[in-house]
Length: 321
Ligand code: MLT
Image (cartoon, rainbow, N blue to C red; front, side, top):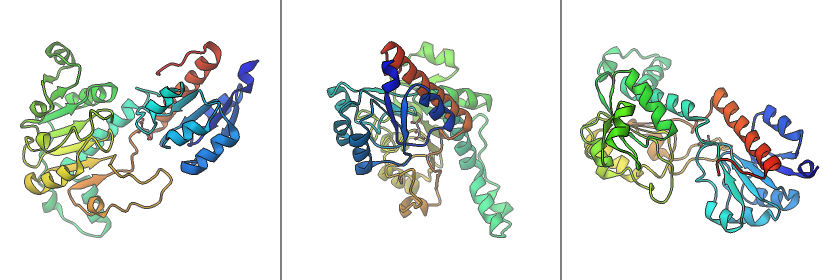
């Protein structure tokens, strides 16, 4: 059968269960950590029809190197790491796994929110260093009745809204395609613009995809209308939050930031974090881009990858494309 000949190259770590399911009807070449020129060389050598990646960047050079390449699957939600324009120019499909890790990202967002308010990470650090600083930590604002602005109300933003409402927060929402009716249905206050959503809010959380339109979308304009000392969380993508404005607003408005993503993130396989302007700033709390990294989310994403490959091989149809 033609599908038996299908060659799949996996350039990131997927669950062994996904790889062995794929191996039943594809020739699977798995080399987690392949990137840059090594990935170009592997594409030239293996000539896969399907390339599966998670964090690995897929550039023009990669798409050019894979002469038989007809489908790139992103084992995640965003496709900003793939040159989609070049792929479509070459007639290569790009599929992703939207909605499969939304709960995981929403949970981490709430984790950041509580950490920013209660300074759990600082508490623990002090205790580990043998300090007892109860007075220092007696100033949290609390979340109930506080106003949270949620920017982006797709799958992840919606899960965040549900959780914030359950805490008794007043949630104000903004989405590109939004209306007062939709806002009412979700139980959120309608905002016409991002600045309106942010005006007077105690906290802000970002749930947009990164694309040319959303680059730097959360900048001084939005940050400067938040309450002084407001909490800002970005578990979406670096580049949406303007980091220069972030630093300025920390100084001017004492904002505090919880970030799972940044402009210049180390590679997934890197062991070092070198951006000291971020790591040494006591008002910025960074996690390692772990929003999607739960067992449940990785299983759901893995299943979706399998569905995409199955549909593609059996029905010549690409879901989520
Ligand atoms: C996603 O786009 O779903 C995540 O950012 C995946 C990842 O952890 O790289």
